[in-house]
Image (cartoon, rainbow, N blue to C red; front, top):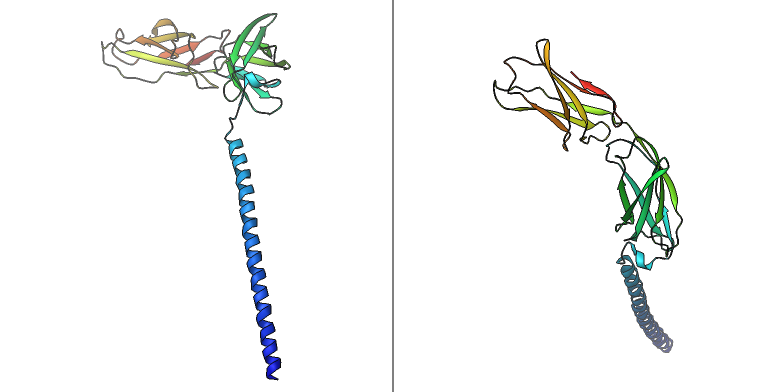
Length: 251
């Protein structure tokens, strides 16, 4: 009986020893596996990192084919709106930097070509809100003939601007040299409008003095109140309909 127990104990110890050795070997193999996985993962991360560190655009000198994109513009005169064109590398789908683009603006049969370079976003912006009233066809194409690209067509529609007139009440001292300012803005964009003809009447009772003025680069016309008599004076402001703006008035 004792011999059997002794033999069983020895066998149990042997089994334990073998299990411990296998466990150590597995642990060692697992460590090696982890190291290899870390190396692969590290290599993969380095690749991804270097890829994400790449520039977000493609230089025009490395491009073989480009796709141009744009859209129609419909706005009012003097709104400050732009026609925007984007150049995309046909292969990488990344924007193309420093690429010359021709924009051919038609007014009837006449046209004007404007050349601009794309920025780091592959974009060119061309101000269009001072074009004549009406619809203008625009042909967009690359200036370079070495890069493959199709020209595209779009339209810019300019309508007469609705305007706002700002002429706040003011109190001035008699015989004081001070200006009464009137500001004209584009109703759509809230931007000031220059070179707009404005008719101003300043009343003293039923009589009035008339001024024919034109807005400066700040959209402002003004007159001096020094010559006005004591008392309240009504001021009316009128802008006649023109090739650029719709009629407007303020009493």
